[in-house]
Image 1 (tube, helix red, strand yellow):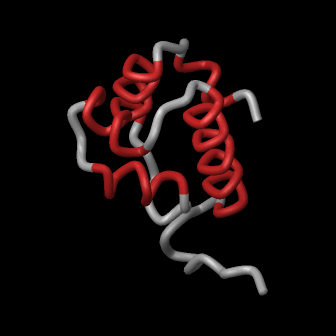
Image 2: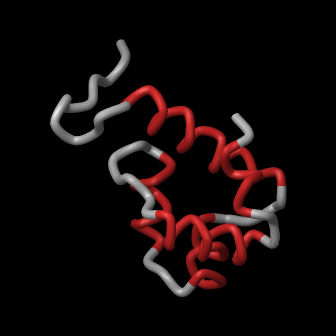
Image 3: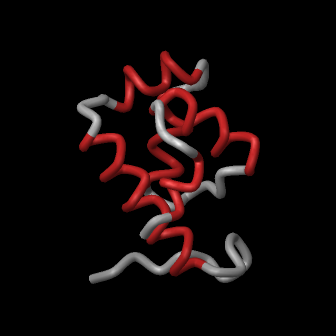
Length: 80
């Protein structure tokens, strides 16, 4: 059964889920663990977990930080 996100948390929950899945796929394709990415980005591992599981919306600033830590252009994170 699919977990339903609270309507008030996201205006576009489908997009948050798609972004999180794609973000995780990019991270894995680059051979990075959540722990390693968190260390590279200077953030908590729990933040990565929440973005990947669509429990947190990543701000544009966070997306830039994560893209830099991944070594990819930020636009790649939106190619889903």
